[in-house]
Structures are given as structure tokens and as C-alpha cells.
Length: 102
Image 1 (tube, rainbow, N blue to C red):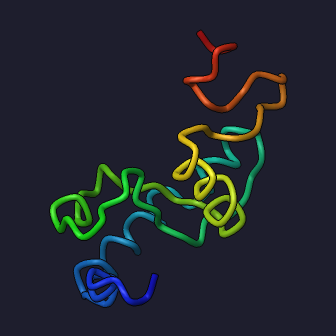
Image 2: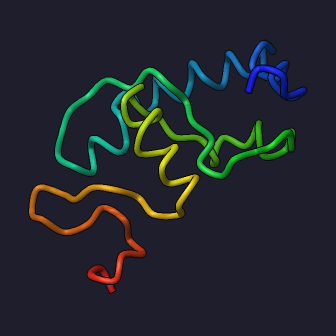
Image 3: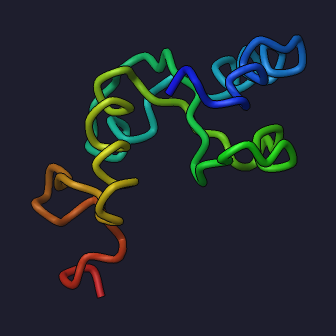
């Protein structure tokens, strides 16, 4: 992943300002919060992978705050499969596209 040319975008002043603002405005992990948990967020994630598209990379509406565990597991699984794993405390799936949620 470090050999991708857009990795340089993460070292820009603009990104660092956006990251700081995102974590200030949404300090808790969005995925954990959906499960009813309170977990501090440490990663600013691109909801739609940018793949080098600078407009998408710097789009504040395309950002979400996640804890490292959710970023490294649930989000990566979602990007691979298109399905968000897990369920809420009431037993309903987190994934709004799950057939039970329809």
C-alpha cells in the first residue's frame, strides 16, 4: 500500500488540517457508535475509496472517524465484500443493505 503514488497526499498540510477537524467534530468511532459502544476514533477514513482522486480525497463529506479495530477489520471487510459485518445490540444487522433490513 505504501508504494501507491497518492500516499503523498497523507503528508500534506491540507490533509492534516482536515484530519484534525474530522476527529474534533466526530471524536467517536462511527461503527462502534452504531453498535451502541463508545470508542475513541483515531483514524480518519475515506468512506468511498479515493484511489488517488484528489477531489474525493479532500472531500470532507467523504470522511468518517473510526477506531483502529473497526478500520482494520470491518471497513476492510466491507471494501472487499460490499457487506458490513456485525449487528446492533438489538440483533439487527448494521449493514443497511442486509436483506433483513429491507
